[in-house]
Image 1 (cartoon, rainbow, N blue to C red):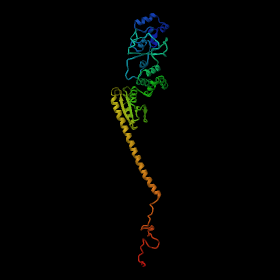
Image 2: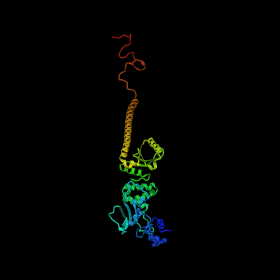
Image 3: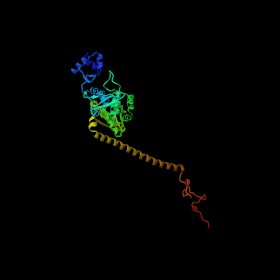
Image 4: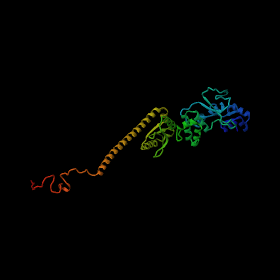
Length: 358
């Protein structure tokens, strides 16, 4: 077996003691370096990686590729990637080197490399790795990067199935106040970078946003904004062959009383002001409709109250009986007979044909 094969099996990096223990000789190592089959990342470290490989550069500095740089190797979601190399070294380690040359000391003012010292980092052993473990890298991202970047990283880790909710809680609890801030921005239900970026922007504006809100007719809404606008984020990778299904989804959204809005990656990246204008208009229409419905309901309630009051007064009158009789009898009595005192006289007039006594 060639010496470079041993190094490759070890993950692309190996220490001199590992290779000697496996049967290699100093002469074999020197020959492999001279012929370009191996590269010295640092004294005592050999690699099959190219000199511009991030892990190779971190090993050359004297530490591990860490934080966001380590997650980048795994494919973390990033909206605007930078070129900063993040390296973690054990607290107290010295003799750090430049990332571009193992014989040059580290330049403390080089902004292309960010070095962190970690007291919990174990001293490098024979099987030391050059890549920070996933959970440690996530903790470092939450502590050291902007909250939006950290939320994207956690969304990605959950979406890819690399961590579960228990691991998320463990990461956030280790980060104190920064963890609490990021917890308000992240959402383990997010299904894409576009969804996460859009959700975080809308949360920053004060909207209520739910990821993957279920539709009663089947399927999920990418982002439900303020319970009335359904925003679909269409990346070309997943939506090129789904034209008909996407339109059916829009129809389902409309039947449930919400407004569908569909945007693509170009809108989110380069046309965000237009997206906000459209969302604000849709939200304003829903607010106006709700206000109008509330006013109409109030008017109906007021009308019903007035009719109820009139009905109550009428019922009170009915319960009290008919109007009371007048103080003196009228010309028409009950039963169609004239009212009188029983002598055949009415209103002081004598019956016809009778004589009046003098």
